[in-house]
Length: 326
Length: 311
Image (cartoon, rainbow over the protein chains, first blue to last red):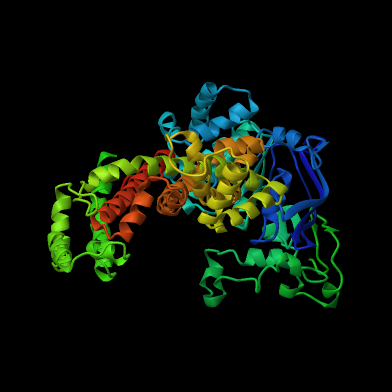
């Protein structure tokens, strides 16, 4: 492991503006990603994992805004970069894959052209050279007959193929960091596996670090060595993937692990087959006082309704944010 | 493509028939005939026998469905009939009046597009800025101004006070005569196009693929040029097509006001005189041009947007 991590996020805070009021949609989020490493961020819809990624690539738009913290990329603070400087990083050193391959591509532009843009923007290529690179890029994400597919429009491709195109775009410039925001959520299960394999393989080949964002703990555990569990704008538990499964510490993580469908012993116990966590993530403007998980927590006591739990380092690495952690 | 155009052409036939029928029914309900309209204003008294003979000659004594049948049979031979008033073929009357209306609607739409679309774009790219506020307040006002009032104000200012432009008439058909009526006619579509363009651009601004474009690290200018403009254009084009139809319809008021010798003023005169064949012909021509323009727009949209199929 190198001395200096690729990405160091410290006390990230993202505000959501509603009228004149501002609410912290993401708060005190800190993590690091080493060069070539894959870090997982897991959590329910609305927990702030996607906007964390958008903040890293500088694409937060009103009503969301970066309200604090530092983002150190390759040893350089990037949270205050000018938009021109940020554009040189964006797509080039940090790139992003989005959840919806159906809408993430311009419907009126051939996919080859949309890949070629990357080489024109960041590599100073002419359109002609860029078109040729685009064919190679399509071949690298294993799209069959890439020389013909480059002329296709997005609507002529399946969801899986479009996500491959997105991957080709994101990895075109060989970035240091790939932000993958639920890259397989909208896809069929069989296609999911192919896309994940592709991301894993290509990022390994190019030495690209990946921030893998998903609501699917199983998928995250499969792809990542370390995992951050997010709840209501905070990382509530951050540990090695295998520890998360074996000895989840935060009651929320326990709930997540228990809600995974299992084949085998537990699957036979009638109604107990699938556990759920009661309730939903509170809206940003309505985060409860004290621990934000307290309305849904089975272990909540008085202290949880008053005090926001601080970070506790765990003995075998990682940390948890809970008054009653194991 | 050829099949698409053929199908669209065939589709126009029932529409034209329905329009013809509608006009026939209307004129059978409203009181007065060509013959009576000549005497009703009191200027000329027509002998009852003459009136009876005219009614017979023009076929007003037949029931509506018989007259309609005859008219459709005529239409099938591409014959629009004779004007009651001038005894000239309707086709010839229309041909004379078509050009001025064509020029007027085209000029006012060019005026509307050339200013409205860029204005909407700028407003959307800087929401909340003074350009946005001023142009959108202007757009609402532009939509609500009555055309005859606007026309009168234009005449007053540019013809009477400043004396820059002729106040009315077709003159020699030169550009000077065209300017005021096309502005009067073009302000409403300009306002509507500015609003539509702004809404379209704002909507696309939030589209996922625009976020993708930004994530690639391109400047906002390139985002607009490479990704946003074409997508907005499809929406704007459709509005332009529909606005053409509205403008041809509204040309009636403006032509009358500016004494512009086009289809609109012909239509108004012919309605007052109950010169039904001319009214029929003029409306059919207007409807037909509306259909042609919208087919053209559909073809253009299909060229820009590969998802639109000719089917």
